[in-house]
Amino acid sequence: MPILAENKRAYFDYEILKKYEAGLVLSGPEVKSAKMSGINLQGSYVELIGREAWLIKCHIAPYPPAFTAQKNYNPLKNKKLLLHKREIASLIGSLQQKGLTALPLKVYTKNGLIKIEIGLAKGRKKWNKKEFIKKRDLDKKIKQKMKQF
Image (tube, rainbow, N blue to C red; front, top):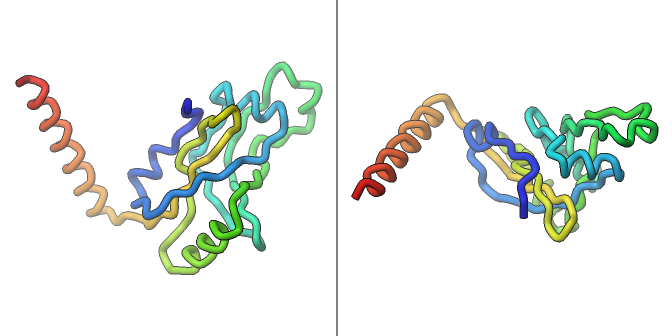
């Protein structure tokens, strides 16, 4: 399960409450570009329109060998996500709560298909981020000390 792209900033800025795995609807050149790590999740988010989930502002670079097939290609085009009905219903109910949002966490391949991990997230306050940094640094120091012995 090689990871093609990861949204590391989401783990720092948000507290991830629940994770979902979704399929991603892409064209052929988009798939090849994504598999060459031409995908960027920075600033992207998941929006529910009707009973469908969409990935908004996700940048997938054009695939150079398919230049003729992608003449009018928009790299920021909205991409449809494939989720089960019960997962979409769960997301709809959760996103109606104040302060919750759905973010893409990582894109990876699974059995040759491109999958995306979506996280239901709650924003962290500035003091929460400082605590998170302190805890992470403390854990690093503990691991280093453990390796020395």
